Image (cartoon, rainbow, N blue to C red; front, top):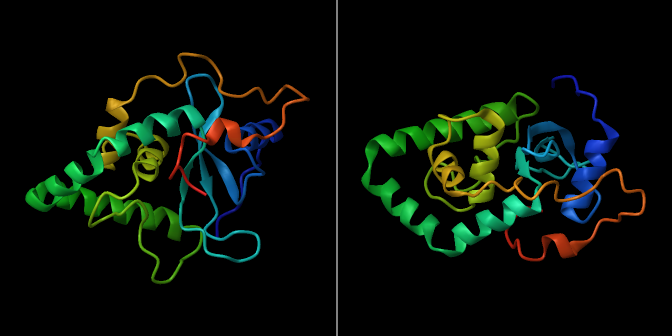
Amino acid sequence: MTSEPALDPRDVRAVGLQLGREPRAIRSVAHRCGCGLPDVVETRPRLEDGTPFPTLFYLTCPRAASLIGQLESSGLMREMTARLAEDPELQTRYEEAARDYVARRDAQEVLENVPAQGGMPVRVKCLHVLVGHALAVGPGINPFGDEALAMLEDWARKGPCVDPDDAEAVPSKKLFRKQKGAGS
């Protein structure tokens, strides 16, 4: 197990406001939105009670999650999965992405018999996971995460999605209602 980096309380508050609830198992901010707030966090492989939590890179920004949800509802995942079945080079790259994801999670703690998330490496099941992975590790690792990310408009263009400095702001599910499947 690696040592835990210090978390900025402002970042934890921002993530809580984004999710509409108290964040769980945050290890670090893995990527920041163009507005400066976290949009992807790296999580520990287990929740505080010991329950496995295999989603290593968790997308937190409700605007990004909503845009990704629109891609998912368009049938894009079905089309990506079909391409995966027909393209051996793409299969190889996606398998490498799955190995990267699991290796990064296993560097914290091995979750026995728990595969990579998002459908990796056999199908495309959750673009939120794949985009989170792509944002956290950079381009060239997760081909479908990179592809979906390139299709998204800039979710930071309207400014911050939440204000962690507003002492009166409280987490609200209203921010997150449109984002079914955006994580737990």
